Length: 262
Ligand code: SF4
Image (tube, rainbow, N blue to C red; front, side, top):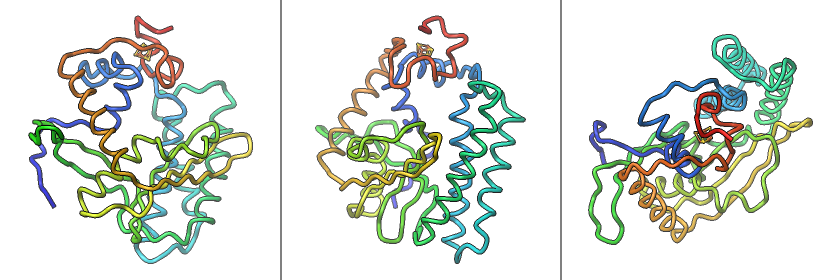
């Protein structure tokens, strides 16, 4: 595996997604290193869910799961810590309890339904060189990321939490999944069998949606071109505000202090 100097500057999927959503948010977060005004409740919830799921995958990897209630407990402890120790902004006073119950239900359903998985790698970090495709030149910047799970049968999994179900074709156009499929190919020298997006939906009746996509090199190439354009904008300091970006200012952790909030 290619080992790169970790001192080199890098571009992560989060940085790419932030530039696509609102370049000014990128500027505040990654140039100014400005502290968030608050932690959105969806971020705290997602972080506690991810932590519990990755413990579950590690348990599967290490020989199996004896007590599935352990994972709802990991979620509860993690989410309680978020609520008590961090500056989380909730919709109202009822939301922390609602999210606690929904999270426990989702973890319960996940660990009961996905015990058949065979994880080969959990939270797999990668650092790969960014190569200018037309010229073949190595750029002085790496692409970094962390893949939620790769199974023994070469399936790349990404987990997300959201407040609604996603359209069935969502996995095909999910940039994070395409990027992680590309990273798998670079690291292992073969295509992944499948790309899977698992959406843990925190609707009134929580549920789990599994969306699949077939890896496609043309999509990877288009994504790489997009990443190059984004990288050029970063190098040019082109950080315009986009209050109507992916999630809008309402979900932005700088919405209390940002002068462009609409
Ligand atoms: S509050 Fe709106 S305009 Fe300001 S950084 Fe966030 S998304 Fe961009």
